[in-house]
Length: 400
Ligand SMILES: Cc1cc2nc3c(=O)[nH]c(=O)nc-3n(C[C@H](O)[C@H](O)[C@H](O)COP(=O)(O)OP(=O)(O)OC[C@H]3O[C@@H](n4cnc5c(N)ncnc54)[C@H](O)[C@@H]3O)c2cc1C
Image 1 (cartoon, rainbow, N blue to C red):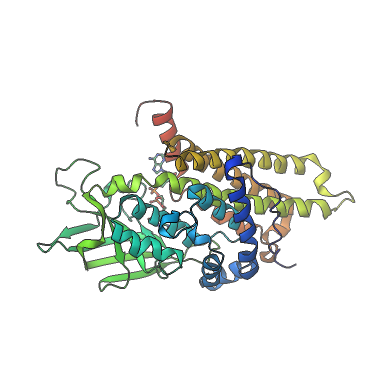
Image 2 (cartoon, rainbow, N blue to C red):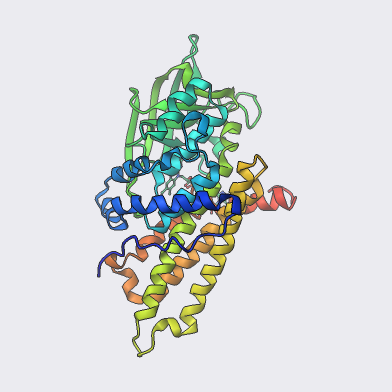
């Protein structure tokens, strides 16, 4: 058996608003070229070797896909979150979900929203040509989901610079990113500044002295690695602060809808990849003479996964459109992440069942999809927290 390559059916276009159809179609088209350079087999090989996906990054730059989501007046290709979502979905559909792309587009969103003109020029514009790779440093060992409990401290010095001390964990791509978008306290935990205040969002150069990485052995298949990142009195210039001191948490929250939607795209693309493999297999595998796809016990879970993914996809593109038109996309973005990750996990489960024992043979590349889709139920935000959001913020139920 060989790894199935990038024969993704781009004609099966997701349902998107007619205004965005042309954009999404052009992204899907561009992704064909990217997948030819960095196919799923190479993605898996790098994941097994603990290597990187440099060719994927370079191909994204060459296809001008990193310009999508950056306003045209800055030299970008525009397209907003709808465009970024399409890039993420299309790449995941061909089995090469780009985590580094997701992290960089999220981080540059924060800079676009809250950074100075200079920071936008230095860091956002630099992402278009692929010169800037940014990872995200939010999670801490003790705080976990509760980022308010983060302890990493950025003390301001009399000259305006900061000294950063603390630790982050699970930081994806920390080794290959030149900067990290870091959430750190600017007021000690015991200082009375209000729950959401007392934080800063910093764009920290990863080559600064005092930053140390320790790799985690994460059991999933992705070419990006995860790290514990230690900050030992790292001297950071005042210009590293994005937005206002004290409001870093709110700045971060203002970008989370972007993240929710692109994570839905990541999951749904991969779910579609898993489903297509199952359908192809179910058409030919015939231990009793009839293809197993004719048995409704096999067919129905695949059909259900398809229906549920399509429904989630509609919510996802609708959330992206709302975000791009400046509306509050919180409700739809959270629902897209919840529905998208769940439907995609159901698709991979159905794909595993359809493949039987073959699902567990590495070369069939079926069970290899499961850990990533399982992680997406938990990271970047667990689905329970999304349900909390829907329960409290959408339905108006009391807070836990
Ligand atoms: C592969 C991978 C890559 C990652 N990359 C990054 C990265 O680049 N940058 C970064 O900052 N972080 C990253 N993370 C961290 C990720 O965002 C966290 O794992 C996630 O936010 C959950 O935090 P935790 O693991 O500490 O779980 P905990 O907070 O300990 O929660 C454990 C479980 O408790 C439940 N739970 C928690 N809170 C609630 C609640 N309020 N209500 C109901 N149930 C709840 C959930 O089921 C949850 O899964 C990554 C994680 C993984 C696994």
